[in-house]
Image 1: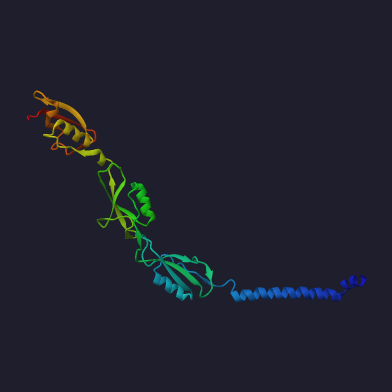
Image 2: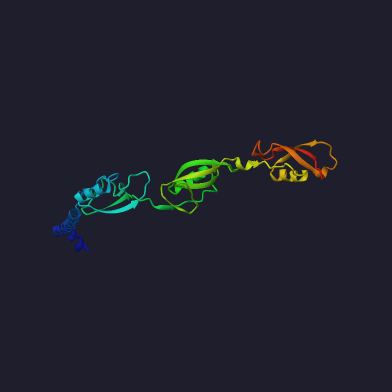
Length: 255
């Protein structure tokens, strides 16, 4: 054991340790600088700004810098067809020669999408749904219907279009909505020459209310009365609100 401690204090041991440390340091530095040279550390090509450029100009720019490229397409309604809308890597990134740059370009042809079923929706709901499908709301018109602002029909290019029909993405869909009044209006029935029971039945069936009954002349048999006048009549008002009172004038029917 004493000889070991004596050896540790010798010049030979110190030289051996220094040689081992030097060898390890040399190998580390050699590997570090060799890797830097192999990977061209600190050097490279700066990826140019390609977004908004026409695809032909973007390709020419990449070729001039010895960079490869791959192209994908997407339809964007508000962007110019044939322009670059996305790139990977980002502009300013340092890359090696022949690195592949991925480009996303706006396609010139809009893909078709299926029209969603809009009839259960209100106008606001339809607006959001169409936007989610890449469609837009065109003109809006109203027609009589009790469901206010409820979608009754969808039109494309002037024609009624059904749910599931294919239309180009970005198209404008015209909507027909209910005005909230249609079902509250009904036609005035023609009661002239009806017997009183038939007139009452017609008034009830039209969701109207029997108003005043005016008797013209003596009444000998109430079961044989017929209507000779009504107010309102079909000429005065073709449609009235549900529950409107219909006044009638009756006379004894001659049999």
